[in-house]
Length: 143
Image 1 (cartoon, rainbow, N blue to C red):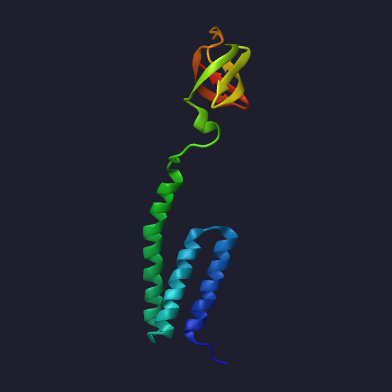
Image 2 (cartoon, rainbow, N blue to C red):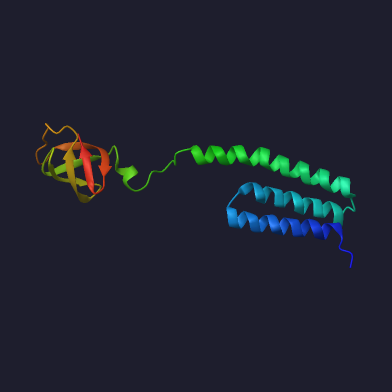
């Protein structure tokens, strides 16, 4: 039983695709695309072994060279829309119960939060507006 070259390329692409799913290494997906392209060169265009290997190498290298820097840039960028406690940092809140270095209560984003003054010697009275500088657990640190 003689298997055509294009089928070997598809088997290789499938193995690389499985590796991609198991390891989450995007480079394996790019190599799989290169293998599928080499299979097309073999099966559709009837290209020889040298053409298949060259197409595989060129497509795989081009994908890695183009996609990898873009992915790295996206991975290192901060998200444009902050969520969770990160979105609350820098917001203003209204003091509900006196806030000092040992505690108190504020209204932040429509919710009542426990709060503590950043400067332990400073106190904020009810009705004052404060800025949230950090969130530690369920306590807002204000100034």
